[in-house]
Amino acid sequence: MTEIKPEILEKMRRFAENFAKKSGTVINPNKEAAEAVIQGLAAHVQELGKPLCPCNFYPDKQEEIKRRRWICACDEMQALKYCHCLLFTTEEGLPITEYLPEWHEGRQIYGLVKDPTPDKGRALARPEKIYEILKEYVVEHNLDIPDEEIWEWAYKVAKKK
Image (cartoon, rainbow, N blue to C red; front, top):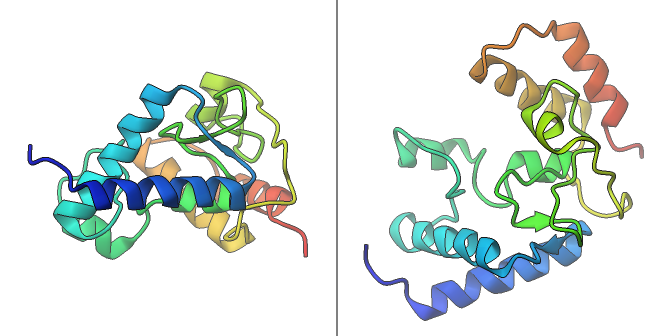
């Protein structure tokens, strides 16, 4: 693997710090975990020109960039305030799972982790976007969750104006 340019690495560190503040999260207090994700993001910026999430496998990274779903800060983070990479967490180093339905793996693994700053973040927390994200999750994980239940959850956790 090529060495990551220091200026790209620094740019991703600044991005992470700024997004954490804006979203009401913190950069994971486990410095090794946070640095591994930041380095992965920086490597993708250097290779692809975009901070594609390093915590997923992509059969076609260029196609994934066109879809934009997993460009950091990903759709899940911006709508549900859930960072599966554990870069953006609570002060205890846990991902926020309050906006995930019980059948989501994040909720099953970590339980209910309340959002300590519900007034910050979630720029994409509209019912339609939440439904889209969860429907895609259901299909990818071969879950049998009725559309009605997905819509119900989307309306329940959408940001109120």
